[in-house]
Length: 545
Image (cartoon, rainbow, N blue to C red; front, side):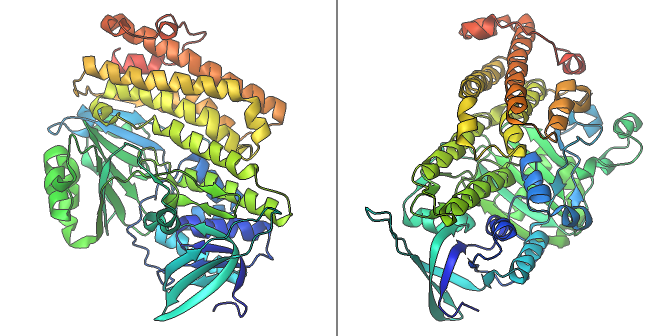
């Protein structure tokens, strides 16, 4: 029920993953906080939900498991994730006849496949038991934001909502929009930003465990990752020009299946219903379609979304409001970054609320943390933007994976694991290296696109690129778990910058040997780059580069 005086410290609009994890994070450190969570659904929610975001990677997994102390729930009630796995092949090839990129062993830093409904029910129950007010079955009607006067004084915000046909109003010092695609506050304040990344998606769940391990009986392919079939525990990506298809297992026994595509290559109207999706899969990924076909009657939901990526002009305000989760910004489901930005955004919001509670000004901190958040978001966007046509080329993508992982583990993940993404002074001390990483990333993403223009073939040879054989990948992932002091962390970061320099030189010089026409127009520093160390011999050998 609503507090008698209708006064709260934090009002969170939305009781999904972003809103409930923020609630838990705040209450763990400040159990006295009065928090109201306003949610349109009734709890417990169905464990089958239209929401994307079941696959976590290292930042999001660390946030859930360690920062929020949910590891027991994740281990007991969810599934371990066997990394990201990618398959390249033509429609007539079997998985064994194509190229597979993935690990033969689990990486050191854990990740999980998360059933969103199950986790959200657990979080909502915990929130209520620890003093939060969960207002379910509600529709937000209006938010009245206040601003500070010249002396810094500020009235509370007001939220008007309907519940059971009755209109209610509550006041709160902070308002956080975690309303997902509804983006209530973002719409009210006209904060939406077009990312010029017009990717469409459709996804559904089948009440059956669809396992890629059973799609091929080739003994060499079966034994490549050991005696026990476990590819199905990966977030499996079926790759093609302009698209990818995901398969994610859920602890409930269901399988999440999604199609994500560039509309210039595969328009949404080709797969915006279940029947159309099946027809599209039969054409492009017939093995996947054949695996789903016996379970047509077990379809649990279906959703198609146009322009799934969403940006924001502003996410935090010194006037004590914030956006988080999909209500703030959503990159692209490829590489599963959604829970990462929930983790980063929520941690920054918790920092702002904590400073405000201590009566310390956030006039400078709010825009500073926002700048860090949006810079990380825009830097990550480079990984996806204009890159979908490349997705069917296994040679280019196998090297792009290593590059993208190195940027991710070497910078944002490293700082997040060491609790430094909310430390502007420390981040400033890395500015030269951060700028160099961004510059290298811009140039490398352009290099991959230019390489594709010359080598557009999507032919995939029979090959297994074992990411566990790439020493820098296993090392950079393992090092995430090491707690470092500031000096050692700074040295580790700049060591990672050097690894990225090496990768620039190693990739470009190797590719230029058999595609010399790429040299024309290549920035001079890339054309002349010479690595201090070579890291990718196993990839070059597997892909015959």
